[in-house]
Image (tube, rainbow over all chains, first blue to last red; front, side):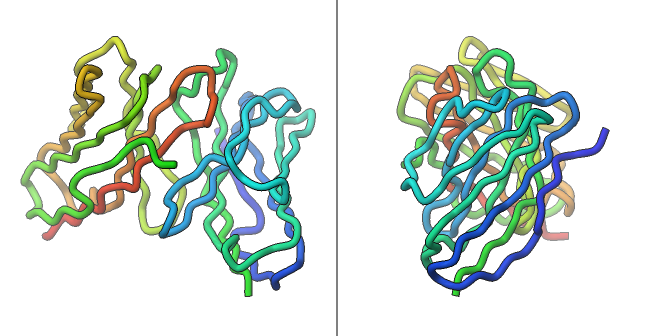
Amino acid sequence: KAGVTQTPRYLIKTRGQQVTLSCSPISGHRSVSWYQQTPGQGLQFLFEYFSETQRNKGNFPGRFSGRQFSNSRSEMNVSTLELGDSALYLCASSLGRSGNLYEQYFGPGTRLTVT
Amino acid sequence: SQQGEEDPQALSIQEGENATMNCSYKTSINNLQWYRQNSGRGLVHLILIRSNEREKHSGRLRVTLDTSKKSSSLLITASRAADTASYFCATDKGGGADGLTFGKGTHLIIQP
């Protein structure tokens, strides 16, 4: 079974631009979560989607948004990029039926650098 | 905000020795999980322990959970060079609210 894939793997953007990151979950997984990892703040939860609906949301500004498609693939978008948005963005998938968070399968991440 | 706090922040041991990492958290949980991350890559799930369990084993891994102290420990026995990585504990409060809350991790170095 193929693992979680994320594209692109690396991205360099300029302040003020916007960016879209993509995540393809493991086949059969309907829950996709997104996390931001930085040296200073560590791993922080952005949001979780299940069956095309945002089920949970972390404490990030509205510049961070996401969506999930009918095939469970998910995208996250960051508008008006700031230097502080430079981070490794990780997505994770799971079956997600119960709403509780059990074993999560993480992708390799997208490393975003904002200059 | 970080719920889990790992201790120590870094640990260096000789190959073959055992490594113990600790995690503390602040609120009640549904389960606690441990993940490994190699050098800025994706996280790999190691083991999950539910709030009504006290100890769990998986291969060379042993996890304990003390909900009265809000703490957990991860023991890796007979360490190998390939165990060199960062280890994170993560808690689920139940219902997925706030997602998984991760600690800042313990960086483990296994000296050959």
